Image 1 (cartoon, rainbow, N blue to C red):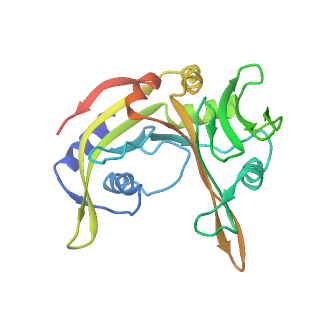
Image 2: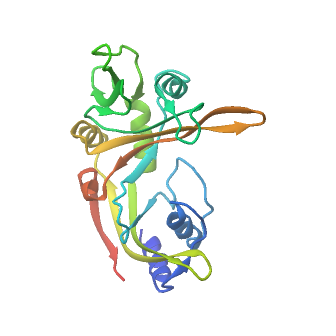
Image 3: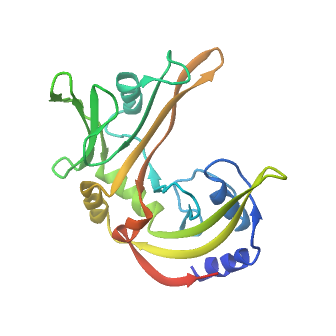
Length: 249
């Protein structure tokens, strides 16, 4: 962590830095580039056992921090089942379905007919995605879930140590580019998997499911854009212990 802190101090002295990548992940891509790391979607931590996360502090939108991504795993093709049976017509093309949902421990109504919620089932050792049918006034019996085993493995492998970097973002009209100014850096250590489950039960951790479609050759197919467990920065110390290593600009 001291090595990362020293490298980060050098990045801070560079002030405004032109983005090395587009989209919402531009700040993270830029930070990894400056640290000498190639961009990837690896399930392993970003930098020598430490997972890196950036959060924009001059945005009018309060975005949660994505902890890790993991598809439903109790049976094969569960994401496809979810998409085909509970998706709804896309606003861009009504002939094709999408499934975008932010789901926590309270029922979230995503369609007129169906609501979804997370339920921690300690007996079956899984986090269930429960579905309620408003037309028939019943909870569906279909089992969709994430196993404790794989959730714990993903959490403890990816997030045993966490680094959160606060970033200012600015769009330069002259050259049509984004610039980032890297501010405060904070380090954290994971508390426990049991705390992770407790925060799901409390609604502090939610899951964000993003399934769309894309063209492959002459055909259109489902496109799983990721299923991410998320937490807001204000709740981060419920899951992690903040460490004393800090550098302020």
